[in-house]
Image 1 (cartoon, rainbow, N blue to C red):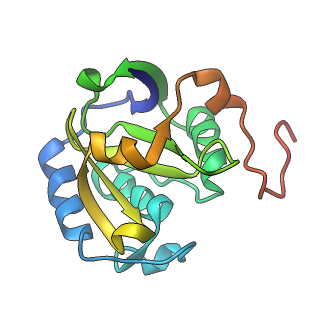
Image 2 (cartoon, helix red, strand yellow; image 1 turned 180 degrees about the vertical axis):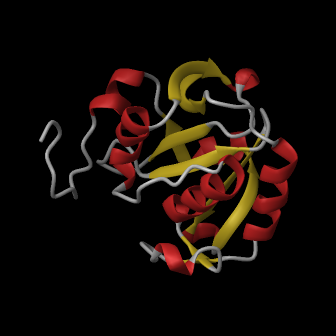
Length: 163
């Protein structure tokens, strides 16, 4: 199976620092749409990834609706879209996912720790967790094509694409 990821291209990701930060974030409480200032104590999937990218990659991302994040990352920072297999996943890769019962294209984001492990924060796990990629794929669908991810506008957004 192949799927889309976003990969930071400006520098190598420090996988040990990423793993260490993710282990600390396993103690977080999950709540939908927490404020940035609440991280790392309270996170949702988007806030957890925002925090990790800030701490490990040293890039301050904007926090918008999750569906808009891929497009925003590609226009402001050195990220690249790749269509890869699970064996090609690298630490720091961002996986944008769709809940299997959701009507929205992008409902979840996880950050890869290796080709087999990801970190994410979810309500069903009650906070941050490190989980096998195959387990995450049992609840979420990976995005198969980059075009979908790059043109998608989260329906909850106030701003239309291109404005």
